[in-house]
Image 1: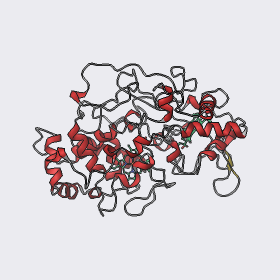
Image 2 (image 1 turned 60 degrees about the vertical axis):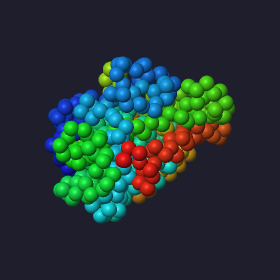
Image 3 (image 1 turned 180 degrees about the vertical axis):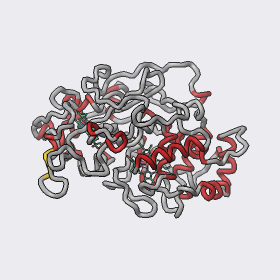
Image 4 (image 1 turned 45 degrees about the vertical axis):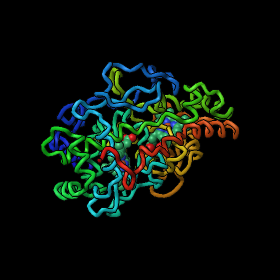
Length: 421
Ligand code: HEC
Ligand code: HEC
């Protein structure tokens, strides 16, 4: 069972240096998961993609760490036991791009999370280091520090520290394949000259700084810096640049926010998604939705093992419920949806326009629009060709080229490293 092995992986994190997160060591059980996974259809607090987060709370920003955030972004939540520092972020970046993290040295995190694709891999479903196919699509990591529940449909993964353990040590599926190979991993890392400087600097006072817990903490700190907020749409909506996006994209923005298309109910706020958390927010938002992508045999079923939150909770009503994605950089993250079964943005619009996808033949045949578990916000609509082009122009205006090319997010190997000296 994936649930069991995932819980085991999170327990490994807790045992190894207490990296399992902000909520203490108690990994919440399915029934008592901290925030309740609920579908909150009315979304009253968020007024659409332009909703402003509250201003930063607190005067001491992370021990002097300098965030490179757009002025109108809140600060990500940082666990008390993993404060930010420039040298820790640099260590995390090295680890993120280090193939020594996979047993056969063939993959790093970046193998499935490529910067130029907003940290996705271009595949429908990822391939692990041993060739095993992942059941799901690699996720974009832009603004991942603001996500309240990590991965496609897991109400239990609440921090990046908890999530990072899964690709390194998980074996359902094998990604990096390091299960029970902690000693081997640490021996490899200890032999690297840069790490001999970076680990002690990143974890001062730790008598054994090269530890699995610290690997996890450093990667998570790097991930919190993956901030994307400089798309043409940002420059238009917050940068005072009225011409940063085309007239067509402006019309598309209005359609996106309309009660006709309803997109903004689930893709809202500064990160264009509804499961967010940040410093100063009263409580993390946690939402999962069934959008009618499948309805196998008319029963409402999604094909196993991708049945959404139900895989974790075993609650039948959670069938097909997944987390809405941020639509930032969505033009470069194809293919789409949890299983990569939607090839293009045009096809994604077809799915919503039809109020759910119909699959005519084959083992997954069914009329998604009639899925009994479907969200009441996926209601269907008609678009003229011009309106369709407008919505697509808006989605393309969310591409942040600076994020996709910034050297600070690229591989540091082979580059100068002042903090390593
Ligand atoms: C074999 C390809 C592969 C590798 C290697 C990999 N990932 Fe992923 N990543 C995925 C897939 C697939 C998902 C979606 C997982 C799911 O839903 O179960 C994902 C999801 C994530 C998420 C969740 C993002 C979100 O919005 O919730 C984070 C964070 C992440 N990966 C970070 C990492 C880090 C850090 C590493 C290296 C330690 C890594 N990944 C290695 C494929 C990979
Ligand atoms: C009821 C909530 C809801 C509404 C309304 C909604 N979405 Fe989504 N969206 C989701 C969820 C949940 C997913 C992931 C579904 C899955 O993988 O099964 C998603 C996925 C997507 C994706 C794929 C993202 C990726 O990275 O794979 C796109 C594109 C998208 N939505 C665009 C839209 C547009 C455009 C609209 C309006 C026409 C819209 N959505 C309306 C919840 C919603």
